[in-house]
Length: 195
Image (cartoon, rainbow, N blue to C red):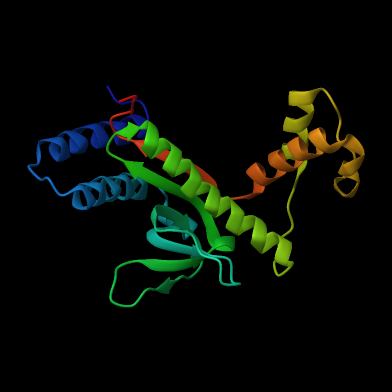
């Protein structure tokens, strides 16, 4: 019996993954696109239309020329720029909510590459914030609370975190960036394999 929408979506994903697994194809990039398409389809079913969000794939930029590598799936708001003669988009990092790297099976090298690739998205977001072009206001109380719970220290106001000492300041800024930057996910349909 299905009790909530997540169970239904998980069932759909499992059923469709089985169909993809049985499909006879030996072209790696196309196999990857099949699993990326499945991820987008299932996520698209979970996101209410009323939110005005979209699932796209393509490139993320910071408005100053820095761009990510190709993103398998990104949850975005606002408007992106269609990349000519493709079905991909170029989207400003300020309008990216989450990015997902999709793999059929995660091997050690894939996991390492995925983390490096997704770190580029966080770097783009950091560069955008450093540019001072954004007008966003952030509630840092969740990041401050997480820092406090992890360290047992109450952080000073944001402009005075250098008083924490270099190690705690770096940790504080890590909590802040993880709180405000796009969510980064690595999805392996068949889990992690060490070999």
